[in-house]
Length: 392
Ligand SMILES: *Cc1c(COP(=O)(O)O)cnc(C)c1O
Image 1 (cartoon, rainbow, N blue to C red):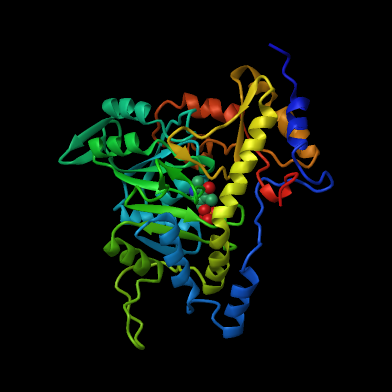
Image 2 (image 1 turned 135 degrees about the vertical axis):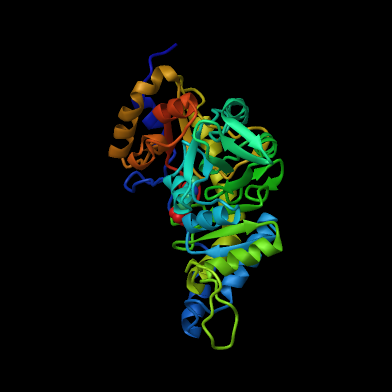
């Protein structure tokens, strides 16, 4: 084997970018459609906040694009996750299985419900929860009683499992849903990163009863800040709308609320931006996939590292490209990060694993060898397609 060369890795990235004088960001938004027209329409009409047609239109377009029966637009992906967990009946004292390798919002949303995140390991093939290892773990750890699942160690009820599609790559959903069925767990998808991704032909976020999307500024499409809940059932979608709009009972003038609701409604002006962005998502996905191909070619001859490729069952949006260093090259990770960032190539390490964060250190967890290995050797590559050579 040839000697591992961090500089060669950085050169490979650098060769792809269009403009060496401009930083190549991890993921920045692209506004190339009807954004101005729709936002101007909001401002001209005075409909910028809680009244206006764009929220309904965005919800209908999201349902159409994803194939989800219902979509409810909210202020951000974290709020969407919070309400998904409430809809999954997560209660104070419960545990919820979440990957240790995720963005902190997944675990925070569990905490907002007064529940405890219970961390599970990931697979190298998907970067998401490993269904086989989870099943083996639950065989020892879980006790199913009266259709409900309990942690033998803590005595707490394990209510749900949140699967997250890491960097847009779908997890292996079928076996995960089988595990959920076997143990009486409610299946929830954190699809924040996977708008435009498909699993066996079906859009991510349409498998669980409720799923969360994010339209933060760094995601594949943006509303400035925003998110959505996808729901299968119309009664659940109605409840999502009710809870995210202060649980106000419709009346011509009275302020009557029948639950402790949330002010999680997406403002109309953000939804206007979202309508324009969603029109371009099919194009965005193709551009991300083309960039992934370019990376694959660029790194084909490099030894000691490989570009992550979608599993056969998936069609990924490749929101963020991933370079995986071999175990033997992992020690070079920080050198690659430093070299590339110095050159304006905005690479990033993966998130610090959840069980290392101070507020989650004491949470229950299985052994996490794969997540820990991925943490040590995963690098996110600059994935803004409009800054790629020969693209636009
Ligand atoms: C972005 C993201 C969220 C949260 O979305 P916000 O809109 O930023 O609140 C949740 N989970 C994952 C995995 C994310 O990447």
